[in-house]
Image (cartoon, rainbow, N blue to C red; front, side, top):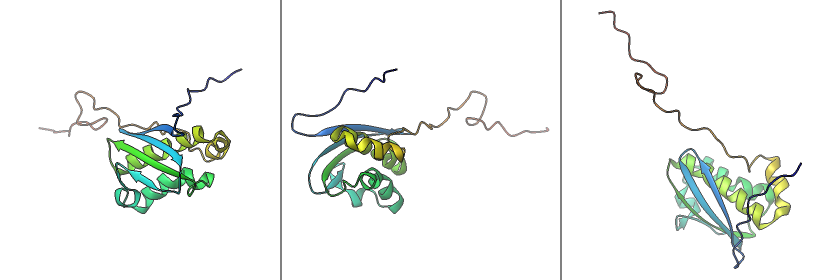
Length: 140
């Protein structure tokens, strides 16, 4: 039984690319050797993600692999809300780190950082007010 690996997105300059998705957010992540600088949409990381919960989510792959001070990360993210964007960045960073150094894959997989969260908003159905909520019953 053989597993088919996705093509490695490694640039000639040493940059590694990773794409992360969560709900309707999409993050394109570029990882290169550096000193730990992270920028999101050309803004500093701490300025873009204001909530501590979102910051911890984005830094989770770096903390799991111990490469927080070893790489510079540039992220372009769009769509969805702030928490969805943080989740997309987390998956994108994990995928980019996996291509940057294949030895990190086991640490990332143990904390399930390479698994995409497939939960999406359920579509609205006809005849209903939402995905499942019906109309209010009226006796008269």
